[in-house]
Length: 167
Ligand SMILES: Nc1ncnc2c1ncn2[C@@H]1O[C@H](COP(=O)(O)OP(=O)(O)OP(=O)(O)O)[C@@H](O)[C@H]1O
Ligand SMILES: [Mg+2]
Image 1 (spheres, rainbow, N blue to C red):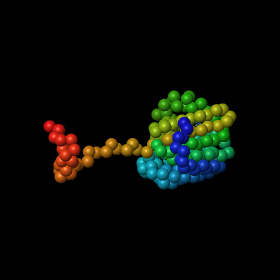
Image 2: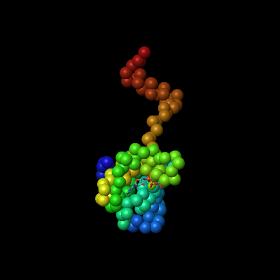
Image 3: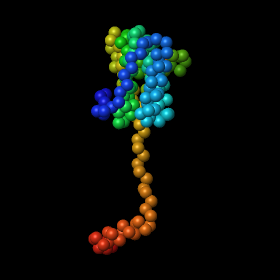
Image 4: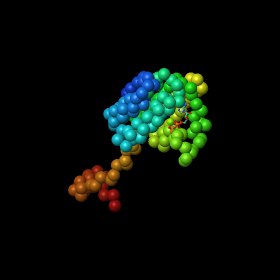
């Protein structure tokens, strides 16, 4: 999915797959997403999803580093997490519901529930890109504004003066 916002602010991080890598990514995302105006509940959903995706890259990919690209667009905050590791079959994984008795295997399922849009590109031996999007909330439709009676009658008088009586 390409970003259409031409002046979208970006933050591009390169993080070695070492201890605290996921924590570093989570903190960067938290700070940027708050600064860019995402509300705290959405920020924490996104941060949790980013933590799972980075945890997967660190644990399963065997990549030396991961890159985290953060973008603010007019619809929300987008995060792309890339590794240059083993790759896997996303369709195969996403088709499986987590086994209720298994201790593991919930990360991708959780990510999918936490974000508004999830894209996964992965190829064997080349690596994986996880694309997460959390939207800004839709603007509420404006309520009917109460019109003061004198404003209303003034308006009616103007109309009558201009067009004559409507009735
Ligand atoms: N970046 C990645 N590189 C290689 N394989 C991956 C990557 N991300 C996920 N996988 C594969 O997809 C599987 C499912 O990932 P998921 O996060 O759902 O479960 P998990 O990491 O095994 O367990 P949990 O996240 O619950 O601790 C992983 O076991 C792994 O085989
Ligand atoms: Mg996982």
